Length: 391
Image (cartoon, rainbow, N blue to C red; front, side, top):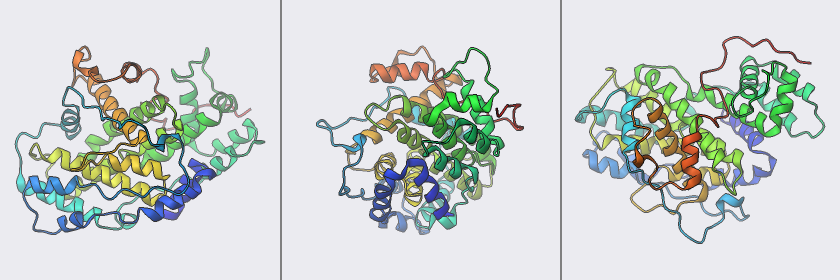
């Protein structure tokens, strides 16, 4: 399974990234710190000590021998992480949990944290069930690399996957492309989307079953919001990727929440009750471990090193983060997308002047237009294939 996914993402990122991906995988094998492994043992310290252990970032991968692309080049000035004037992270966590924590249940918190640390100390290939990538997707990615393949040939491959057909048609008729008349011809849709558009659609189709896993009460409640935020985060990364590969930025945004959905599945397994009281310290610990899971999984899937580093930086730690450009972008896009979602669902006041404090003009515009510039219809893929013409 891991090998299949590794090959898939190698195709997704392109052959030029293979050397970088292999280097990343070899360098980053020390995936869990000793403190994290120790924390999985039954005798955990109090919540504050646990928080310190959870946010201790694993050692960063060493610099590669060959230079990476623009987003990993050192910058003259250290990047400063944006800190919203409003408690976006806390509000978002309470919202996807379905209620505010209202205190804390120490025993339940410890049970959850022990399970999370045990998962971190395990072989994630064995511990986490990751859906298989539809067979048509790797074939399509190989075809996209060919300069001679026609739109008709691509259409004949796409039509074999119902979900992919729905995503292609929905995307080409979205506000981003805004056609004068609805496009129902699959071949015309492929021509309008182009190579970059098709790669984005394929990435979304590959990630949707990973994010949108139905399990117990916690996951069922949180998964739709997490997927919606994942899409918005990916779109924000793509939109704000100045001087970076926008497709890599898009994939990094989609990857950010993979660990979070796994952490929620773990909540389903460890908490019989659908709700529990949690302390103020629980949210940052839970979020940090979820980010570490995303980073670990990206290692397993042999993502490019600059993507792994960006994901690793989201876990935080006791030391100040020397942000990479992609890591800094992901941090900002993640918060902007959470804030956008909270405003859309009435959890924040959209006219509050504090919302944009500290954002530059591009970031503020991205927040304002995030719904209009989204690449996909987030209402969900169609259950049945739309009526499309392949010629």
